[in-house]
Structure formats: structure tokens, C-alpha cells
Length: 242
Image (tube, one colour):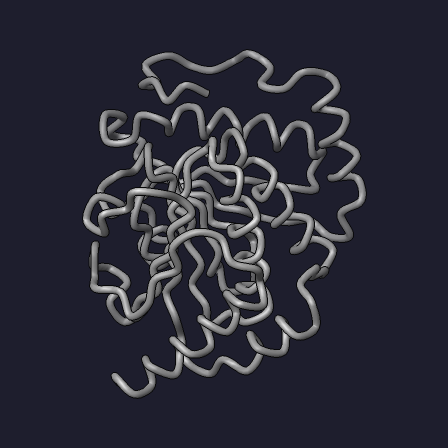
């Protein structure tokens, strides 16, 4: 997964046998099927140099999961994609009820683990957050846009992404978007992101805008309970702004 342009088709096996077996074991325990969308730029590969690799990943996971995980590949101009308001490609739109949890870019390196975990949570209706964290998130009454900037090598990023993904399942008023900042630097540059994880909390009414001013920022790792408190307090600010 080197991020090179996809002028050729990908036909090789992406995972070694040990990894395939480990993934197959996870998928076999799914209590229900999960349907994701992978949104790509089919007519403009230059706009999305990792779309080919993302499609290859989707195809391989479809094969390995034996129907438990279905990743449907659609173009960013399709009706479904338009309704979802896709901000970058490739975009993995996870199969949560409101489609409110996304990953922009290629989920490689350290980011592959939370990519798999979110599907387990959805398929098995499980949350691993503490009861205190869940109660804080459940109490949020105002929508909030959460942008998590990560890189594949960042050791703390998966912990932050995993926590926020679960929070998005607990309360679907939260739009949770993970953005691979090396691959998709546009907004990271606008926010002056120097280190990751870097989380920007904004008003979802301005979802289509890039670089919209933050209501709050979380710079670096915080425990889930602390992040939940920041989100709760920020959502209160949105109510006052509105």
C-alpha cells in the first residue's frame, strides 16, 4: 500500500495466509452482515491516487469475509454518494444506521486495526467504552462534526479513532470522520496540523466547507472519558451558537 497511482489493476493477494485466517475468524463471528460503501473517483484517477488500492482492499475483504462484510464500490457522483456528502475520496462509509462514521483515505498501517474493529462493533452490536463514557455521549443533544487527522505510522491515532468510532455508534448525532493527513493534506494544512492525532470539532451545518473554524480542538491523545467530556461541552456551545 504505497499510495501510487492506480493505472493498473490489482489482482494479487493483499494479505498473507496467517492474516487472512485471522480476518476470516473475526468475520465468522459477525452476528449480522455489514454493508459499507467505498466511494471513489472512477472517472478521474489523478484526483484519487489511492482509489485503486482502496478498491483492491474492498475486493479482498469481500472475498475473505464470505458475505459477512460487503463493501459496495460506488462513484462519488452517484446518487448515494451525493446524499452522504462525501468530502474526500477514497471514502469508506461504514455500515452504521445513519452512515455517520467514515474513513477518508487508505486504512493502512496502524489504522487497519480500528478499521476492522468498527465492523465488529456494528455486526455484533457491541461497545467497549466505559459506562461513564457511554452516559456522557448519550446525553449529547446537538449534532457535532468530528474530524480526526491521522497518519498510518501514528501509534496513538488508532486508540483515538477507535474511541470516536464507538461514540458515533452510541450517538448518531455525531458525524465522525477520520482523515489520513499525509494522503489528504488539504484540510490538515488549513488547520496547521503539525502532530497527530489532531481532532477538530466543528458545526455540522457547515459540513460541506473545508477548513471551517473549529469550535474546539483536541491536540494529542486523551483517555476516552476526557474526550467524551470535551465533545459534550462542545455540543453545548453549538446550541448557544445556533
